[in-house]
Length: 406
Ligand SMILES: *[C@@H]1O[C@H](CO)[C@@H](O)[C@H](O)[C@H]1NC(C)=O
Ligand SMILES: *[C@@H]1O[C@H](CO)[C@@H](O)[C@H](O)[C@H]1NC(C)=O
Ligand SMILES: *[C@@H]1O[C@H](CO)[C@@H](O)[C@H](O)[C@H]1NC(C)=O
Ligand SMILES: *[C@@H]1O[C@H](CO)[C@@H](O)[C@H](O)[C@H]1NC(C)=O
Ligand SMILES: *[C@@H]1O[C@H](CO)[C@@H](O)[C@H](O)[C@H]1NC(C)=O
Image (cartoon, rainbow, N blue to C red; front, side, top):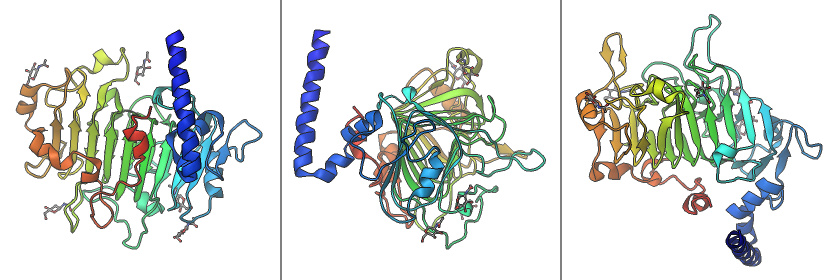
């Protein structure tokens, strides 16, 4: 106890000295640091000027719903922050503005996504008037896209034809310590998204995404980075057209169906690395009762079209993973896997889910060596802007990531 006490005093002293010097030399820096962000999240103090506060119950808050707070923001390029106080909010969020937005969830455990106090729920799956599932993203808990057209999935190998004159949407979206939960069903029952993210750049830190089917959709020109987050689902629950990087996170298997990843590649005039990269993470059964039911049966992914690109790197895989790793997606007797085009890969993975013989026998899983992995080994080497330039990562909160998030 005494040692702990001394340690916290020391930490407090360091923080105080650091915050003090930062305040004198660089007032703007202090405003954006992780320390002040965490204070804003814990006590509604040290928040950036102009922060809009949302609470379903606190009379002092500016709004009772998050969408009302979003609608109150100017439709311009200014940087805006919304602090969401602890509670459960049942609403669908739609963010179209291009200026930077940060959504902060109130928390006293800022480094633990399992302890989040803010949950946003929505209860819907995509279906047409006959109840048939459709490939679209109306049902998401949160939609970040400049227009409705930009957010549409569409079917076929190339998906919905987004009009050429569609602008890019949000250039710097950030969310911290928020759970996005689609409560439609406790099993795969059609696309029931937690997140729909297209034509935008965004980082999710210590967030939770819970559904069963199609939990996370990163659509066309979507660049999404996830850090120390929880991504839960059963069927094709990480899917899309864009680029997603999942760093130091937990991928929770609530059942098996389709694959964990299902990506659709796109032909562009420049070489692209659109795809999904799951790095330094853990893929495992959601709990001890589901683990024996799904042992050896969950596929790492299946190709939504033949240009799927996905890599699990330095990631732990529990015994839920099936021996072949990935599987082909066979429609009307025709497999979508194409050697040399489809890249469904693993690099330096560990755990009982990795079966080398099974991978080789399955014939669709690429086992990368360091040289093969190198071109995909950092966010800067895969995230591209609309014109195809690599290194589009200035919207990632590097202070939180490099600091390990404290
Ligand atoms: C926001 O501004 C953009 C760019 O001027 C415009 O295209 C868009 O229609 C505006 N959105 C709304 C909801 O007014
Ligand atoms: C989001 O808001 C925009 C602007 O009001 C609207 O055009 C669009 O249809 C909305 N998206 C969804 C999925 O409801
Ligand atoms: C991409 O281009 C290749 C080669 O031209 C073609 O075979 C493939 O069908 C195209 N894929 C899509 C999704 O357009
Ligand atoms: C375990 O996870 C499954 C799938 O999400 C869920 O249905 C079940 O209720 C969970 N069981 C426990 C004991 O939490
Ligand atoms: C590994 O995969 C092979 C099939 O290729 C299978 O025979 C073997 O039982 C698997 N091992 C384990 C531990 O699942």
